[in-house]
Structures are given as C-alpha cells and as structure tokens.
Length: 171
Image (cartoon, rainbow, N blue to C red; front, side, top):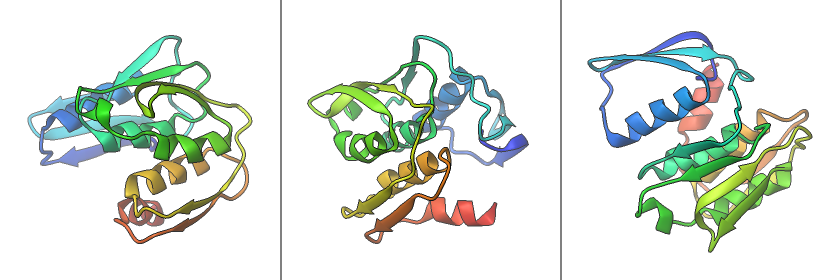
C-alpha cells in the first residue's frame, strides 16, 4: 500500500489477519482487488493514505497488523482508533506506544491495551530507539514511523526477525 502503482500478491493464505489488513488499507483509501488467492493493491505512495475523521481500524487478532499500523499512521491528520478482538485487547501495546510517542504522536489507552486512540503529528522528529526485547513488531513500527520524518532515526535492536529490513533493503 506504500508503493506507487500496482503490487500483486499471489498464493495468499486468506486468513483473518490478511482480511483485516486488506480492510485496514481500504479504510485508508487504498484500492484492493482480491480474486481467489491473488491480491492487487493499488498503492498511492508513501504519503498516499487518506485520513478521514472518525476512522476506526479493527486489527482483529493480529498484533502485527495493529502495531505496524501505528508506525505507518504516525502522521495521521485526525485521531485514529485502533481496536482488536478479545484476545488482542489483552496484549501489551505500551511497548510500541512508548517509542512512537517520542516521534511526536500522542496516544490514549487504558491499562496499556486496546482500544487505543492515536493522534498523529505534522511535526514528527527522528529518534534514537533502543529495542531491548527482541520485538520485530516494535522495531518495524519504528522503521515505518522513521520513514515519515525528516532526518535519520537510529535503532539499536536486540536480535529478532528481520523481514522489514530485508524489505526496505530491496526497495
């Protein structure tokens, strides 16, 4: 959804997480075509999301979707509410809220869990982030948020999965 133009994903496992991600980017104004297990995403570029008032995004049971979206939406012009199912609503979101707050976004959440409301910032600033839990989700959210700032965000991270780094190196 961040690319300019059409991206195609084939042989998708059409799980609840995938459907939740598709619905989330559609909510942000990205056109998606899904036929059988082939998905076309009509990306609008890095600044292409359409922020409307009163957006609620349901990450269902996907912690990855919920946490990565917060990094991607850190420049939202209007408050965005993030919700999840009963299971996701029991999981910790403070570990991602803390570094994203340093960029300039503000959050409202109770007991460090969903639902939460994020208010993005037009004046994002780069940060130094020391990720010490080995969380690929937190590290990736910080990478996505850093892409929205002027300047360089630095990340010192404990070893974790590296899918986002591999993706960003291939661009």
